[in-house]
Length: 230
Image (cartoon, rainbow, N blue to C red; front, side):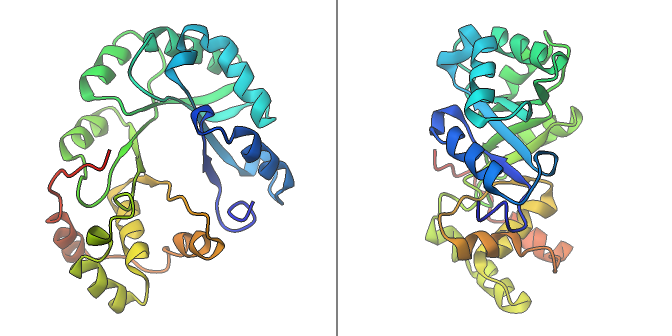
């Protein structure tokens, strides 16, 4: 509710997180109308075999008539059948666009070779220690955007407090976290930082009044060592 009554327009949830009902309540309680909110959620692998019903169930939990972006949460189980059901949901107006979460290049190629609707987004771990360069090049070819989870390296202080971020935070009068989130937006990531702090929620959105230079972006790129936290 704090986010929606602030500057946020995109809310990412999932049945697996067990908070769809709460997100739905917050959407209704907010001052935003449904068409002002971009809502993404996910199907868990245990739902893949009966994805059509699972989609109806998630709509009911959220209390909405449609989902803006529906993901497959993991590339295991009967994800091909689940994606087919998701395509049908698009045709029925229940879902606007489709996405994949935690899929590898090989799994994406397998899926898109059999499907009519291209995934619009891939949700994966991405941060300055792991920018997913090789996968990013493949996704660019297919116009698939990255939505970054663990965007701050799971809150790793060694990442957040890197000297380059501290230096840039002083230069731009921002926090180290705000510098990292701005870096995400400039490399083209959709970024979904989570916080239970109203102050942090507000600060995380306050990153659009400055721009990192090409030289600064290149300096940050040197941190990439393909380190994953999950």
